[in-house]
Image 1 (cartoon, rainbow, N blue to C red):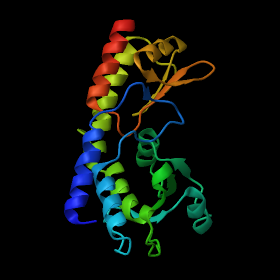
Image 2 (spheres, rainbow, N blue to C red; image 1 turned 180 degrees about the horizontal axis):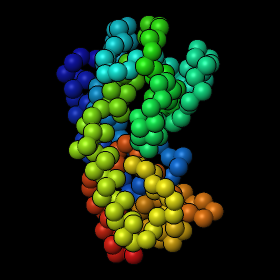
Image 3 (cartoon, helix red, strand yellow; image 1 turned 90 degrees about the vertical axis):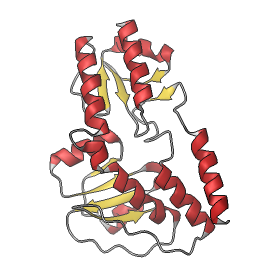
Image 4 (tube, rainbow, N blue to C red; image 1 turned 90 degrees about the horizontal axis):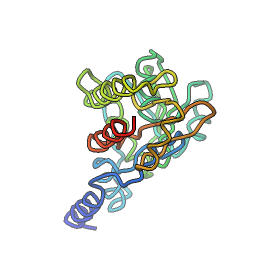
Length: 225
């Protein structure tokens, strides 16, 4: 596979993934992202072209990391790390504001990452997960998502304000996590599929949740409530 072929495949796949399809899965156990991040896609195609190339070693400010095929392998090497969670936006938010120094994060099909303030001893791994996870982790922890003007604080401010004005919240919300009154289940008919619990209807937003999708959700909430 030549560089030109990689560029062609890269462009073709990105064009197919320009927007989220409806209905959109916002359930508690849904995918962490409905779209492939461009850097993850490029790293995947590069690895397929040259599986022997060295995995990237990205500097992620303030953190050290070690990549694994899955959560079980990460736990086997680091059994002392008690904090383990699926890498959805709201879980990452809680980790970042919680002040914990280490965790095992399950990024589903991408693999799992051990992240720590302390020094780790990662092994060289010539597998796909070792090539894509550093790029994904760098994105998931990036200031463009989490600083004052980042995507998730801005989205959360808008959505939280609207949900409160509609008196729909049924518990503590976080960026990307919204427990709503059961009456909110009506939004399913507009393509927003959440999780029905005993006393609430929960929306869990994936990394791919876009401004366009946010605007559609806001329009539906205004229309229905």
